[in-house]
Image (cartoon, rainbow, N blue to C red; front, side):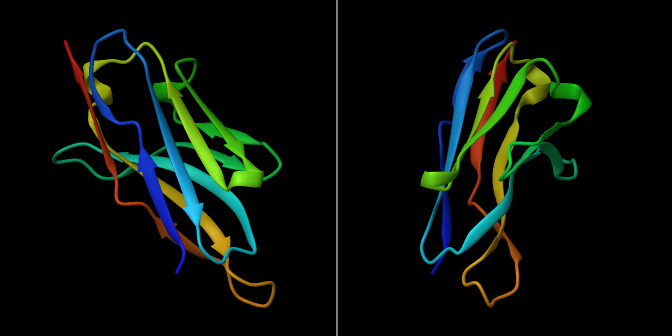
Amino acid sequence: QVQLVESGGGLVQAGGSLRLSCAASGSIFRIDVMAWYRQAPGKQRELVASCTSGGTTNYADSVKGRFTISRDNARNTVYLQMNSLKPEDTAVYYCNAHLAEYSYSSYYHLWGQGTQVTVSA
């Protein structure tokens, strides 16, 4: 069974930094896109950043210049380095992977369990 395990959330003061990690484990043939989403209370889940297997990245306008997404393809792991954090970055952050378990199987989206990031003013 494939699963995503996230770590690195926590409480930080405004202006501080956190690094999130998400590791995929299980039977995996290929992961083409890994991404981070977040959901604040009362708001819809939104894309924060994504990274293809080739290293192409995409960021939400609200985090450009502050957050950096990176991948270790050999370890099926994605990271999110978050700097200059703001109170409005407070949310549950979810890892997402678009993957196939076997060469002959279809790709699907898998979600992690989420990790809380709280930024105090």
